[in-house]
Length: 249
Length: 195
Image 1 (cartoon, each protein chain N blue to C red):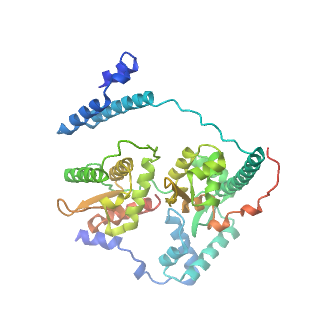
Image 2: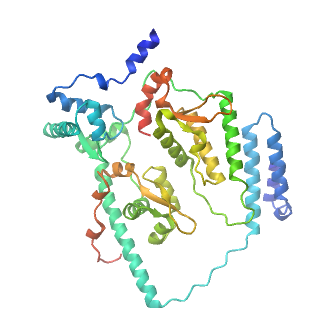
Image 3: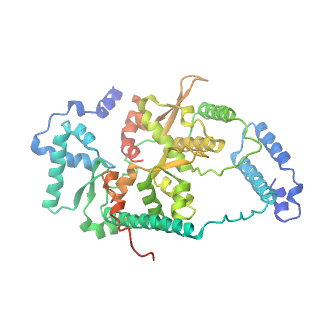
């Protein structure tokens, strides 16, 4: 795989001649057969194929053509520009006022949130195996429910970051409190595949940080997601110490 | 047995807390604000003290006045429907020295974008870009990550673009009680030379 990418980069192999779909299919097959996935290696494969796809798509796209400017009455144009500039100027002035307020406010320092309270046991990374497997199964079902992306269409670039998704998930989980949030409800209904994957990664990251926990009554039951601070009684002591930290997030 | 003891220790005790003497209320406010990591709303303050909001308000006002009168190192700051205990700006230089950080500043582009969002919310990215005349996706993402703005649904037009609005963190960051405290756009001078 790496070798293939290297060859293409060195221009020894023409990207047009590389059948991307076949390569990707092979990788997918390879990954699905993997009993005990080595995430590092799998990640590298995926990265390499993504680079191949990008290279190819760049070559295939026609160079952008400058659209001919529509003729406009110069006076109208001037008027429009003038109004636009005027509006922009007012927001810039407002921004200057915000700067003054920022200055004023930043002179007051709040008490820093304690990074960690003493003698506090946070749940460690080790997840019980069934949890991971159930989560992965749930992710698979979600992705299937989205269905295949249309083969022809306009591809919009989505701006989704992990931190955004983590914040969203955390707020949803906090709002639900003791009731917990059903795992599937954390994914927006009209979300794209990218959004689903990002949300899933956000959930894993929050789990890793010990901010949330997942619970499943029995196999195949709905997976519920809780914030650690709303834990059950036997976890309550840890949570008590966590509370100050969590609420500030 | 040990388990039971533990549980007892962490049970919320507000319900059984003895009523405070009126003259100790400001001191209780001080204690509550000290342990709180963020601004405390009047409702939560009243709940913690076990008194009505009007009484809690009087207590926090008294504490704030006391700090000022005694020229203390701390100040009670009112923002985003809450109160927060902060260091007094008179001692900024010393505070910075011990924390070894200067106050964080937003970039000019971020402030400009934020002011457009604040006054025109909810607003979409293309609308922001139309006003600023430059690509603003990166700035908007930064503001989202800092929690100063959030998504507020989608606009019912072609492409259903995401709408953005300011958050409570925005109010806290600029020391505002609510959005009505933003300076009115009409008060800004309308005429003036473009530089």
